[in-house]
Structures are given as structure tokens and as C-alpha cells.
Length: 105
Image (cartoon, rainbow, N blue to C red):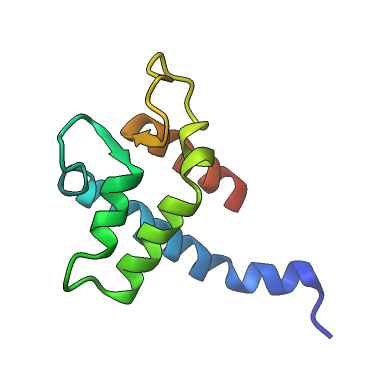
């Protein structure tokens, strides 16, 4: 019988790969997703990206994850621009991904 720790360790490489792919997608597409070029991804920009033609299922999942976790991601980095509700910056994302990577180890 396989215990929970052993089972989790078996799936850790796939989880890390998925996390890395998600992170690469976000950084590679941040400027394209930031339609108004203000340095933030807003809820409206992410919703608009969901409806762009040609998105893969994986990209749609990544965008949906960002939308669902927007407040959590925004809270990852304490910024002086807290007056931008429902927006995430690159610094928010960097702090969020650093947290996910440390938890995955």
C-alpha cells in the first residue's frame, strides 16, 4: 500500500512542470495581456483574453486561475499602489510564484 507522502512525491515532478509552464505563460504574455499598458493585469483584461480566438485549453486554464486567484495574487506583494483594486502586477506575480515554488519543495 502506498502512503500519502509517497504518492505526493510521485506527482511532484508533474506539479513542478505545470507550475513552471504556468509561470512561463504569464511572464511571456504579461505585456500582451496588459491591454492598456499600465503595468497591471485587470479583471477586465483577463476576461477579454479568455475570449480571444485561438487560445488553447491550457491557456484558458491559466487565465482562469489568474482570475479566480486575483485577490490572493495581489496580496502576495505589499505595494504602494494598493489603490488599484482587482489588478495584479509583475511584482505580485513574482512574489506569488516564489511562494508556490517554496511550498512545492
